[in-house]
Length: 320
Image (tube, rainbow, N blue to C red; front, side, top):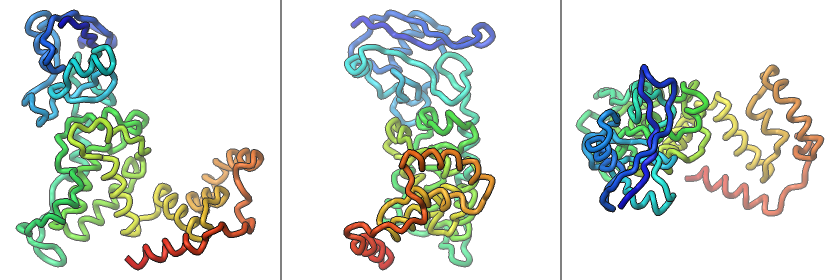
């Protein structure tokens, strides 16, 4: 079949910025995007640059954007894309510098993975099991499939937080960190130390839960869910001094007491007694109050119907 392939090209030293270029190819109907790129390079344009290795969706080298969505090119069928979108547009991953054409500089991505210390701290004293501790099904399932990550970078490319702040640790690195936080061979002290670092700036509380990392992951790792589990673990370890953790604990406390959200109290729960931050959000709070969006925080409101049942849910949770 004959197709039009639109590629985003960039030649260092020649181009000031990337630009789109169209190619018309006669290909077999069963080709993948990677096979199509290889055919283009071998038959028409040998200057085209892209990465690939295993061709079996194991190495993650050929991750790129296909029709605006991060995918592994070797497992993406051209026919499926044409039927789904009606076009075939290929460009490099986002949130990372482009070296040439579809080849990106992955050093920032790998730097973030190294940043979370992706290895175990073996010890045999105290409360730590030996390095040869046996793994049962329960211990393995606790990893939440994060060990399936092939570090392709698709999630980092799709991440809204990384687009806004390049310092954000990123979904792949945080998912990798979760794998070591729940590893039974790691000491309790080491796990707490990991969580303390992850709750700092550019850590787990900077994720905006857009869910794009989950949607584009080729191995169903669900990085965002791993980040949520890291947040729970940090709260259980009493690491609750960040604004993100105070938002969660404050939200739960208000629901436990009133059975519904009190928008007037939430900013105080999150910001606390930091006058500078309070004054910063005060104009927005006044506008919301005048529009009837915020009840007076200290007004006594009648209990909602079923308040006893709401509190019973919290009481039952405590007993577990």
